[in-house]
Length: 260
Ligand code: NAD
Image 1 (cartoon, rainbow, N blue to C red):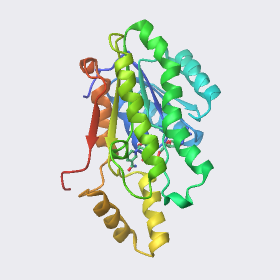
Image 2: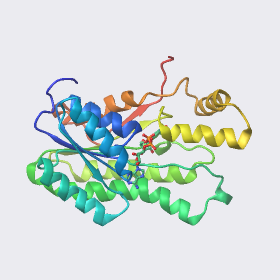
Image 3: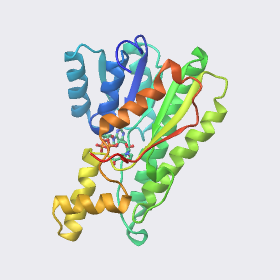
Image 4: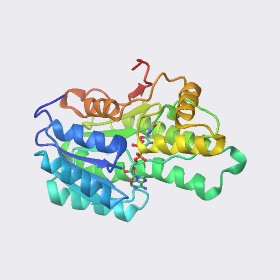
């Protein structure tokens, strides 16, 4: 959608400093929404929000670690104070590691669960009541293909994204009839800094070149190419429109099937 389809709507995007979150924030703004961009890294969100304002959009930046209930509550209050009630929430903040089971430490396991799953729960809980009262809301959770299938060395991430998918499905049922929808997008590997980190890790572990490591990653995932962040953003936007009101509990799978 382009143009003023979401004019008058206020969207909050977590993890909006780079990658998929930044692309989603820009797509929502281009569709007319006012956007609160939040992330743990303040410098990045400040830059994204400033760039959006330079392009004529309404955007605010907020520092928020989604694992901290106090910071999440502050984000909901400050964003509402700055741009009015929150209509749309994109739970995008996430992080990943890869390790075989014997090497996963408890803090690593807890961190992955906390950012991906607990963060989604906390942010959804912080906005759900105001959406329900207004009888309109869109919550889109950025899960992953790892939310619906398994692969080696990513058991913590896979467990966390399965939790996000389960939460989405349960909340879609719980929110039936309230005007609030819960959906998830589930991409394969996307061309973002997070995937760059994965490729760098493969390079370090195997001594392969960047291109060889990327090819190995894609081959293991059965993906012809990396998905582009703006493709994921387009699916997120699609689930946030007025017209998406009867779509809830959906998992939108994106696997980069089309070759470049
Ligand atoms: P990225 O690492 O490029 O960006 C992640 C963003 O989340 C950053 O802005 C970072 O500051 C923020 N963030 C991290 N931890 C946070 C926290 N505790 N609180 C607040 N913000 C935090 O990642 P990306 O590739 O753009 O991924 C975005 C989402 O998409 C994640 O949920 C990720 O799991 C999911 N995803 C990514 C891929 C991929 O291949 N890149 C594939 C499927 C799903």
